[in-house]
Length: 82
Image (tube, rainbow, N blue to C red; front, side):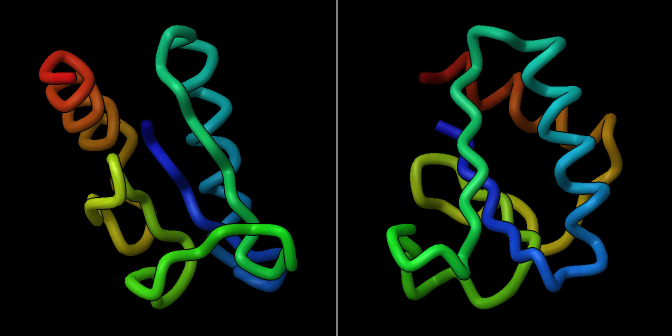
């Protein structure tokens, strides 16, 4: 599962949301979770030190937004291994 941690106060997170929507549109079988770290009900691991942060099965992938091509390449490789 790809988890993407965001915050409403994060200036880069608008791009993050756009990348997540693109992933969902082009990879509908991929489980993408957007997690607002300010939501009191959100489970945020201690390793999440800022936003945006992308994780795959609780392992850090990116701190900050990657280039779209890099994100798709990495996720495709990981999803194929799952």
